[in-house]
Length: 504
Image (cartoon, rainbow, N blue to C red; front, side, top):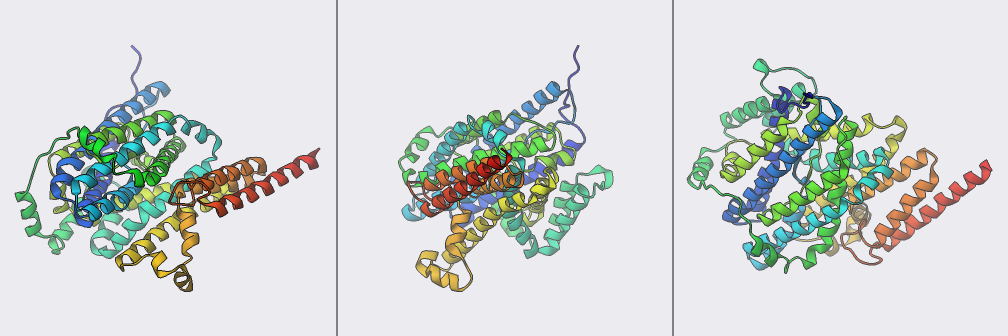
């Protein structure tokens, strides 16, 4: 009988489970907090319809990726295969809340309508992700690793690490404790008593500090317990179709963000490959697209994707079981109505250092698994994400002040050293822009000016239609940027032609 590889549970899966579970749990707590706290959506919709569907999507995706890991382990006859992590796409949590659900709810005062529109928006995103499955593998072949991992490093710094870092520093007497326990356990490879996973130690110790110092409130916990409810996911097909009537103005965000999502999946699959686990890109994109679609049918307003952080979970010894356990645990948490309860037991600042850890691992991987001479390409791929982060910060600040960049005036912002228009252009479509700029620089470093010119021309086409450097789709949307890329492509082609002529 042929030996079976890939055990369903190993000791390292405990570390992976507490890491991934708390990572996903943090994201679910954040998205629930955004909907209830920032948008003021009714709790019966958030906890009774959206959260159970989010749990179902996590269960399906993580079980499938555990199966894929087991299959890869048997195929390659090794026991060190780590399953891909899967969950709600973090950047999209904020985008769908503040660009779709929030505006519709605030304008109409109809929470059901806002929820329906969010479902339809995610459904469209899922379709775009499915379409990406047919071109993603080819893009992965022709795009340099430095460009793919460089733009992923930008995601990890701007969207995964920055906000948690600032939240940790807001409450350092709790956040620092959790952070240092995680860093010692996962970077320092130090074992805690009785081999208790570092993630669990960090959560328990920092939570105890929060309660002992009065940071957490018993009254809030008592109120939540009194409102406890159990909710099972249900297919809301009629509501989904009603939502389509509301999303026409938001397709300009759903389509490019769907493109963003399949690029994110492609980048994360490449990250897993760099760590030693070579998964099928097309299969991953199909799973992600179907996960978003199934989730939307059952009431979710959040698209799913392969999670960033595969090297981190592999490094702490996680293999296959952590994916199964995380999917099951998150599903149970979501349907048992535990999310609001957990928000009143575990302080968010105790959980977010795990996100910072993932950001550190991914940011480092881009430099560690590519040739040192490609480092400039990685840095240039990160820059659009910094612009994206800064642009979001400025817009949110102006919104809080009851104004906007256009109302305040670009000249007034420029007078205060805020290059708003350039920042917005550079940050729009950051994951694609970063990848393209990284590819252009990588091929220049390799003196392959023809390939560099091709990527510049691709950037011109995408700019023309507003996929990058614009928040809206259309014709000649980012015309100046498109023209600039064409000039860049011509210069690169001339140099390529000159090099060939010189050799002849």
